[in-house]
Length: 414
Ligand SMILES: Cc1ncc(COP(=O)(O)O)c(C=O)c1O
Ligand SMILES: N[C@@H](CCCC[NH3+])C(=O)O
Image (cartoon, rainbow, N blue to C red; front, side, top):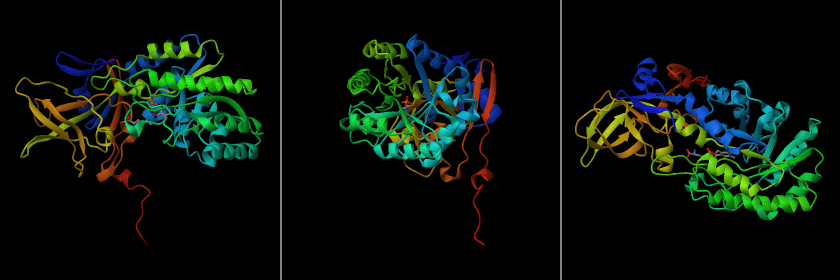
């Protein structure tokens, strides 16, 4: 459920017509709905219920400070993958004590930054990283809290580029080595072993892969207890899918119920790292039709947003709904909706039935996650503005980039 709907024939975010947002800030522009973000966060939080838990929103999905601040105010923790994301969380008023730090390539500097900030836990992804973290923490006279990210070798059944829990993927520590690495971690003086984690991929639309991974992790947790290594938390990662088209992914309720059932009465705090499920359907990308063009065998709607603004269609052949902001009556035409970037792969959607004229506004739905955060400046295109709608009000939460900002830091040869 989200808060984007037609009101008196005009597509609106909560109570604000999107045409009003476009008039105020121009296009292309990302528009988010505060009520939707809050609803999605509460859905997760309530779903886990009275079991001790921490929701660590995955910052990579959308890292705008206003979004992070909103989630921090709701009590969310954060899953980060870089020093930059940690700095954003702190800048947005997030609690570093609720931060888990994932990622296969943490630098010593990033480790120091996170130790200094007092994060909840490092999700360690390799034996070499474990040794490095032990050294870094030792040099600071600190003990680093760690969880080991285990690669459970399960097929998430999602796009190969966003599948992370197969043994051929770069993520996590091989299950076959897990016990040895835990024993090593427990023996290192500057580490404190707290948990285990996994994250098997993104946009999962069924429960069995999650449960399969959880069962493998729980079997490991039980074996570790026999070895005297008692964990206090289990982090099951993110990955719950959303509806872009016809998918019907499990709701947070069903998902959390299944997790709790399998967890049984083990006294483990449950950590969840949802990103997409909180943000994707809380945002749209607003774009204006620049030209209509008829080619030899197809029609093109050339719009002012492009692959640099939203790369998911080009990168993963992802399908996202494209709908008119103020629908017209009249004959529909089949269009490839494309941007101005000089790449054949620059499209937002293909074969879309639309009745449109130049100057019309379109909304690319489900763009709140992995939209702006994956935007680039390719073709020297400044990045889009971001706006948060809250009831009948709208707020600019990121100004449109200027061309001058694009060459900041560049210099000519003497
Ligand atoms: C470690 C980790 N946690 C959480 C997430 C969030 O995933 P999603 O947005 O699919 O919930 C990701 C990204 O896939 C990730 O790599
Ligand atoms: N960027 C991907 C999700 C990747 C998640 C990162 N582990 C997407 O848009 O679907």
